[in-house]
Length: 336
Image (cartoon, rainbow, N blue to C red):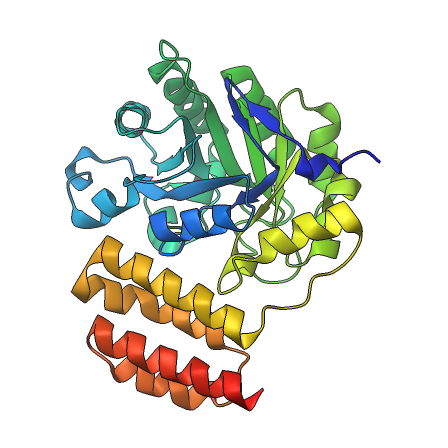
């Protein structure tokens, strides 16, 4: 029996990833500890949080965290965003010098603060600028042979979807792979992701096409890939508090069977190990605060979780937070 395509290696430029289940870049989520955790559960590749193409920002602590690839399984992919070709080229070089094997250009982020600066998905309103940015990014590391990828959306506004044109611009610029979220910027994250145009892009593309948006189960991953013909699937929000989704998808594609959800005992091990990694990576102050959202995602469906989260949010130290989480999961485990 042949392996499902999503369980086979994928070549992106001169790099190869060992499976086609990819972690989407998400600001404030896909940091170094999360990327390593997702890969431990079978993600074949993970793209870092976005760094804004502004040299004045590189030395800031947040950017230093985002550009930290220590302990990651190669190939490492780092994302940058910007609206000025020269600054974008500098940011690409910065990421490569910092250890990135692949650099991803963000033209998909719908956040207002990004779009106000004509970055992210706002760029889809200016295709000439899209071309100049992609040309500049590819040329900036052509001497090093580093692949440049692009993540984008169907278009800026509904009724003005221009992804077919953007895909051609990307191919002509030398982009090595294209990830497409099945919404416009206008959609933000509302409604359902649409895959028809992604299927059209794939039918005509000569580079790998990665489909993204609303892939939240093993069955959905299989259906979306087979419907679009995409070369890989990219999973974002469905992995929040559920990093084992990559393992679940791989198992389903290999066997046709669905794995049971982790037991509370297994969940406790996963959560506490993740907290340890976050505390080590960020330190006392930031570690405690950044961990909160992950804890909330992990425990969202458990009994008495609302009262637990209120108590957890009151904790101001990593040791106190860890203890509250550990005790809650122990009690929940005994109640099962």
